Amino acid sequence: MKKKILVTGGCGFIGTNLCVYLKKKHYLVYSLDNLSRKGSIYNFKLLNDLKIKNFKFDIFNFKKVNSLPKFDIIIDCCAEAAVEVSRKDIDRVINTNLIGTINILKKVKKDNSKIIFLSSSRVNSIKTISKIFQNHDFKNQLKMKKTINENFDTNSPKSIYGLTKHASEMFIEEFSFAFNLKYIINRLSVVSGPLQFGKQDQGFVSLWIWRHITKKKLKYIGFGGFGNQVRDVLHINDLCEIVEIQIKRLNTIFNKTFTIGGSSKNSISLKKLTLICQKITSNKIKFSKVKKTSIYDLPYFVSSNKVISKVYNWKPKKNIYDIVNDTHSWLVSQKKIIKKFM
Image (spheres, rainbow, N blue to C red):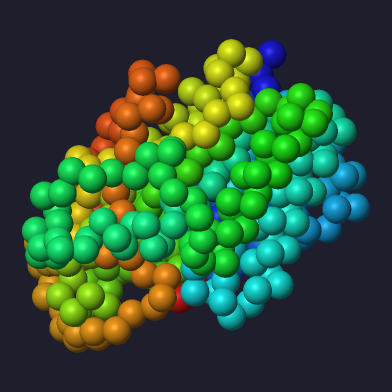
């Protein structure tokens, strides 16, 4: 019998992709999403076409969460994910990211379910990451071999957003110890692909592509304004694949924390991404330089897949060019609709 699965944040970018992927694998899939974000109605219609029911309410409403039917597994990917928003709307970030997860844990405890939690690379220490770059040639950091793994420093500062995700991880671990719950925690780096609307809060890859498609200006912000910042990127399909593998093996592999990302093979600087976008769109846009940046910004982040690759015999299939091409194709195909959500 196929497992009954609830995806929180099921009408967001990652949530919708997970719902669609798992539905096509014949799981019994449900979504929880309050549909407050622009673009969520578009995603809701996709789920509706696949007969995936969405429960429309706020995840921090425990009474509503507690009244949900029983699920075998809850995949908790509901989050206010914009780092800068966490300084401006603290209550919303805490209620959604932390209180929401605690409510899900109470529900999981009540029903003896399992939980897969999608955490963030932002649980890692900003100061410790920044120290890596003391006396480093910033222009050549794409050649760096340093990666961030599960044992990296998680001391503050990490952003209020990162704190809510790390606190959620700790609550999951405590509930597991106290009530014998089975869990998986996945610390995600940048994830990109179809269903990202090219908005700033959904990630820099789709933003870069969309601005090139629409011939609108961009800025290189911080660290001199040269676009040398580096991130690793994971294709959404690769994320969906590893989550399903985890679902299948959750009875034997559980109570573990993994970093998941594109790794060094799929790392890219803003400057290099610009060149790829220029080539794929045949458009060259104007860039301005802004030397100062947010206190939360990082010059470099590349995650290590060493542990998860060993445990599950899994590696990302899509490279950075696949990611850009797939995202570009989807954005072009939905261009008229996307403009309504910008």
